Amino acid sequence: MKNKKTTILLGILIIILDQITKILLVKKNITIIPRILNFTYTENIGLAFGIGANNILMIIIVNIVILGIIIKFLKERTAQINCSIIVSLILVLAGGISNLIDRIARGFVVDFIDVNILNFPNFNIADISITIGIMILLIILIKKSLFTKEDI
Image 1 (cartoon, rainbow, N blue to C red):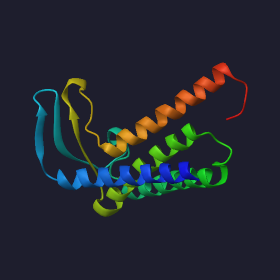
Image 2 (image 1 turned 180 degrees about the horizontal axis):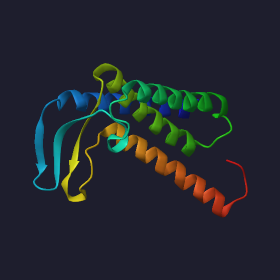
Image 3 (image 1 turned 90 degrees about the vertical axis):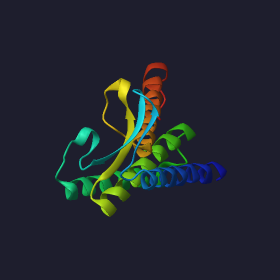
Image 4 (image 1 turned 45 degrees about the vertical axis):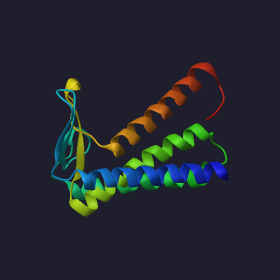
């Protein structure tokens, strides 16, 4: 039970941190490391890389369905899956919820982390959480498929 409370707390902290940073950086551009890292306010009306722009209602519906599937899976299977998978899903869930809050409240997601050396679209803390969660899950799945025959 302690691990469950810890992972839920982790998810809540990610949502709070993401929302606070978005509020603090609204309409601001801040140079952190010149020509390398900036906080550059951006409004993303689509999904990753702006995919699905101008279809906010469909994005919200898809987002809610995916989050619902993750929540249902966690409720039904928490006892059968290992802690790493739970943490990875909580990271995805927290990031998804925080970006959903933006979509519903603002009509877009606030992105602000601008890594100039990567020539990559701006992103936010929720995006980082989702990416790390998916990477952990992929590593676990690849490891299990390569090294064991047991079910996840």
